[in-house]
Amino acid sequence: MGMASVLHKRGFEEGIERGIERGIERGIAQGRVEGERRAILRVLERRGLSITASLRARLESCADLAELERLHDRAFEVSAADDLFAG
Image 1 (spheres, helix red, strand yellow):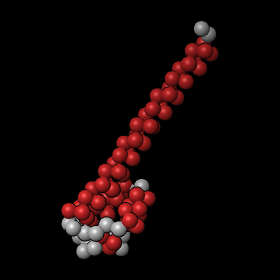
Image 2 (tube, one colour):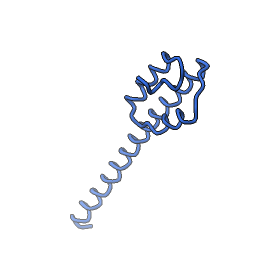
Image 3 (cartoon, helix red, strand yellow):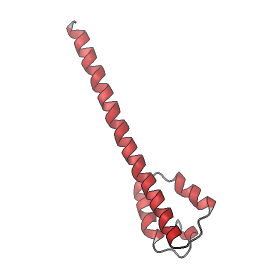
Image 4 (cartoon, one colour):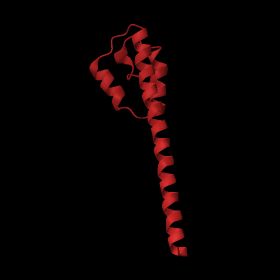
C-alpha cells in the first residue's frame, strides 16, 4: 500500500470518527432538550394545570435548551399553563 493510500485511509477513518462524535453529541443535546420538555409537562400536570394542544405544540417546537430550562423554572410559578410563555 502506497503512502497516498495510507494517508487517504487515515483521513477517511478520522472523518468517520469525527462524524460519530458529532452524532453522539447531537444525540445527547437532543436528549437533554426532550428531557426538559417532559419535565416541564410533568410539573404542569402534577400542579393540576390544564395543558392545551397549542401549548404542547409550542413546547415541542422549542429546541433551545436555555429557553426550556427557563420555562421549566416558570412551570413552578405560573397560575395557568398557558402563562408559561408569557414571561
